[in-house]
Image 1: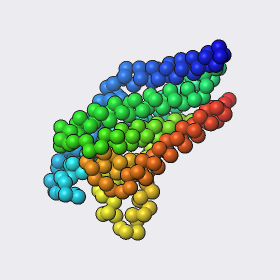
Image 2: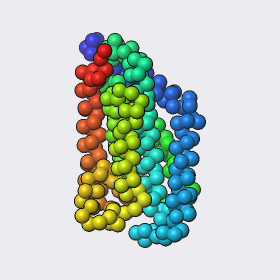
Image 3: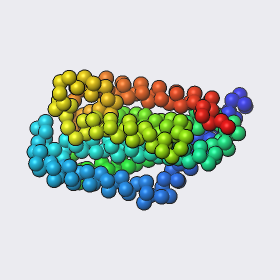
Image 4: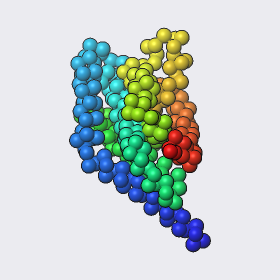
Length: 262
């Protein structure tokens, strides 16, 4: 029992240390990590919501700025959860700081959980700040807080995990941005943030439905506005499945030191 308790203490201490380090890192440079995303989303709301929105009129019986609000919040959450872990772990890998963790008895679960928690916390923090901005542009009432929280947490975990996986696989700074540039950004713009999926050609809609970011946006839109743009339970189940699968994959990669050896 003594050995079991000591291993639990080691795992917990390692986890808390990594989380504390990650939070201190992005809070120390708030002018780079928290303020720019909020400014960017303000510009999205002003340009797309206010200026273009007046030309568009209403979508699905609501003002355009109200329609894109949940998608704007999603974009902030995804970008910051991904960027935090990707940049942090790639820097650790590039400067070989991770070797200090690997010579300790801290288990892989604690390492993965620590980095992902840092990404989740930054993503949720920026999401809350952007939500305030969205509310100031167009006040809203939360329709289903449970759906919203579940979608937010699973989304933050998924994209934090993708950021860490990309950092492990990347061999240089250009490759460290590969997933963001060639996967996340295209899927985001085709994920129903700025238009409903029903506006796409019928032949394209079944393919678009497989977009995981569409699952996120539709879940957020239902949680905030009560608009069901698809089977919410199925979308949430898909997000949970992706989150669990990516976390398990990461634990295996860290445990086997995949692409992290000499």
